[in-house]
Length: 70
Image 1 (cartoon, rainbow, N blue to C red):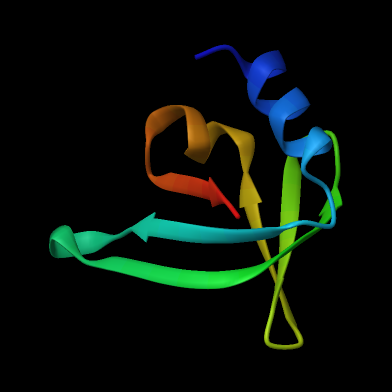
Image 2 (tube, rainbow, N blue to C red):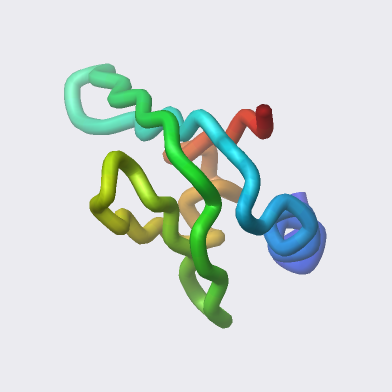
């Protein structure tokens, strides 16, 4: 995937609900449901139960973070 394509997809879905899957250590996967909140040049944030969590576009490209748009 291309970085610009990822940024465009995320920008297009700003303020929409998403499910985020974060692949961590020891094959652990954390899933969160929230709203795509803000976008910046290097990161994007998701509002999850009143708490803002940030992720990088690189994490999406490498597959460490997966987004499912609702």
